[in-house]
Amino acid sequence: MKVLVIGSGGREHALVWKLNQSKKVEKIYCAPGNAGIRKLATCVNIKADDIEGLLDFAREKGIDLTVVGPEDPLTLGIVDAFEEHDLRIFGPSARGAILEGSKVFTKDFLKKYSIPSAAYKVFTKAGPAKKYVDKIGAPCVVKADGLAAGKGVIVAATKSEAKKAIDLIIKKRAFGDAGGRVVVEEFLRGEEASFIAFTDGKTVLPLPSSQDHKAVFEGDRGPNTGGMGAYSPAPVLTDGLAMRVINEIMLPTIRGMEAEGRPYKGMLYAGLMIDGDRLNVLEFNCRFGDPECQPLLMRMKTDLVEVIEAVIDARLEEVELEIDPRPTVCVVMASQGYPGSYTTGKPIRGLMKAARIKDVVVFHAGTTIKDRRTVTAGGRVLGVTAIAPTIEKAIAQAYKAVDVIHWPGCYYRRDIGYRALKRRDADKGPRVGIIMGSDSDLPVMEKAADFLQSVSIRYELRIVSAHRTPELAVEYASTASERGIEVIIAGAGMAAHLAGVVAAHTRLPVIGVPLDASSLHGLDALLSTVQMPPGIPVATMGIGGPGARNGAVLAARILAINDAKIAAALEQQRLSMIEQVKEKNKELDQRA
Image (cartoon, rainbow, N blue to C red; front, side):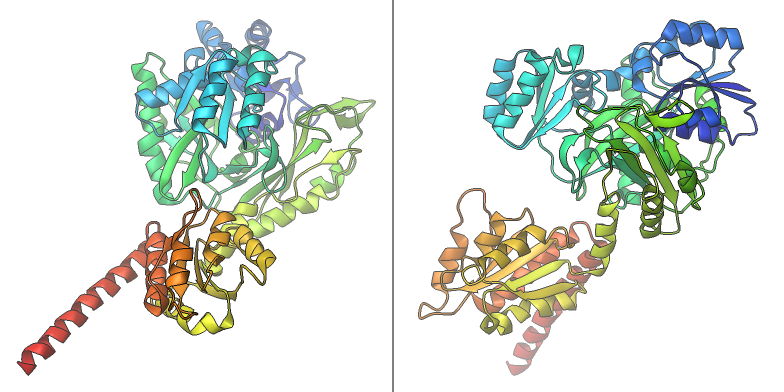
């Protein structure tokens, strides 16, 4: 079989690498390819969006299967053109690829078919869009309607930033025709994940979960990029949630596209926001993600050609994917300045040394050959991908290879996979933080600890004063989530500002426990805790020990929303209380 792969990035290198493992494949061409791909395939100097040129080449060479990597040729109708000439090609038609080609279409589609997504409005002029920003406030998200190489989505922290983004897209046309319309939507909180699946228009066959790192700087800060790294699996997407994604998002989407007269075949990529048990679609892509493709194909053992042919022939229900259970991590090495301006032509050193590292593949993205040397030729240059028995070891192996590769102005994030590590650590560390203003408060706040221990919830006790150690209070609040804390219980007496200070510096639920520490017997603390300004909520309990215990009960109920074991323990507690009341009544009956 002769195969043509279209594209020149890390995704296309991974596709060529995987196709090369198939016994069905005899010869691979790639248009236009890159310096890494040329070692596995014959590179052809035809641009990915040159539909006529690609069609002529496929007919001339008798190509048996064409695999499209990037979104541009799909939205331009390459699948339609090839199929008109009876050429087998993998990907959606132009009418299907509109799911990625137009954010306005997708938002309207999601709304029509009741698929969960953020509230939004569409604008063609800057003025009304800015008025809408004033109405919904910030943070919010501003999106260019069309394709913008993954950079047309701007998360605005303030209304001023949102209005600048609107001007950038509509007035300055920073993304060209993609900015003819702009979507302004609500900001969704939670954790992102990528859900990528094969579909033949009837069956959805998902790959393992993965997570991209879009922001350019560590800690997910800075402007969005095409992706600075990815890993698989993503612990945030549990098996239960994955099943819901198929039933609530993927299947309704392919059925809705069929109903719209836009039958969909190929890869369907849903970018998701997950907040507890809430699922929302951030975006759809009509192809493999990049860099998600690299770690996913490294885990996939099934012959890629067999899956692709089953999609084309509408018999995907016959296929079952075999997946390597080991985690994979891809670290993107980029040119300094990306996603802004950058220089190219920098010689890359260390590629041979990195290639010798066990269980590592260096996928090329923006590379070319100049004077017989591999040099940089793009913003994202390499995707260093590793597989290992654990996520920690996969991360270490990937960075071991990254550390031997160099070129002037090389940049990469050092925290790829940090969310997976955070969730791993959270599984071992405390889930509830119990803090108090003084050590004299400890006997009361231990009532909260005793209850949490009774339902097997891990906790930590800390002395943190809003008045004597304000910096420590702020640090505790702002870092709690990163350390795996999910709920904070804050106890304080007299002025009792601790709960409010903590609530102002975290998005975690804060439960306030007023303590008896003055001649007012806790009433002063009760009023100080309950009277929070708008936007700084504190769930206020009763005074003293009973309030501390109730604070722990409420914390447990919050955690039980997504934890069946805690829910079961709470149910046992409830039944135990009922039995205690019954026993007391029996005693009273015996006295009578």
